[in-house]
Image (cartoon, protein in one colour):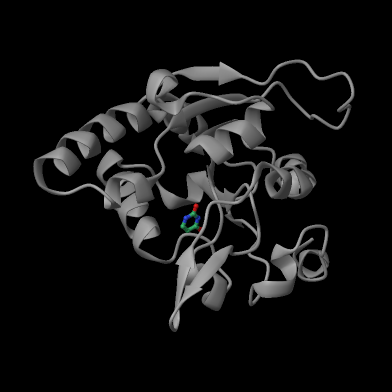
Length: 201
Ligand code: URA
């Protein structure tokens, strides 16, 4: 799948990014954590969540005591989207069309990896996982279910999805606002601890 992803040109992003970034982690994990799109570092290194957002995510994961072997991390969209400002490549949010074009890669990953549950980090991931738009500020911390979609017979299981903020949203905040949002985010993520614990038993 990783090789096939490198050839993907189903949307324009594949022409501009350095490489496609597939998910990584355990097979049959407790949780699949789904972000939006690889960032600058992920695009250059070819691995998901290795930049600043990933550092914050793994800080939270470590403080929750979740073993890394219980996790698989990936993104809704597999190629970096950016705009050039001088020499800097500034992240851009993928369009709905781009996310839809990329959806089959995520579905394939779910089928191959078979996570017990998923965490949607932000609205793009929530939309791709749940096949509908989700107001993350209202629904964060809740477990949602994919709606039955009879057209998608590949849907391997009735995947439960916990929705929360993307770590980049926290990185854009400052001071006390960021600290409060971080605690709330940890609280959301903690709602998945019982799945990690059950997986580990
Ligand atoms: N943001 C994401 O959504 N995914 C990454 O891999 C890195 C940053």
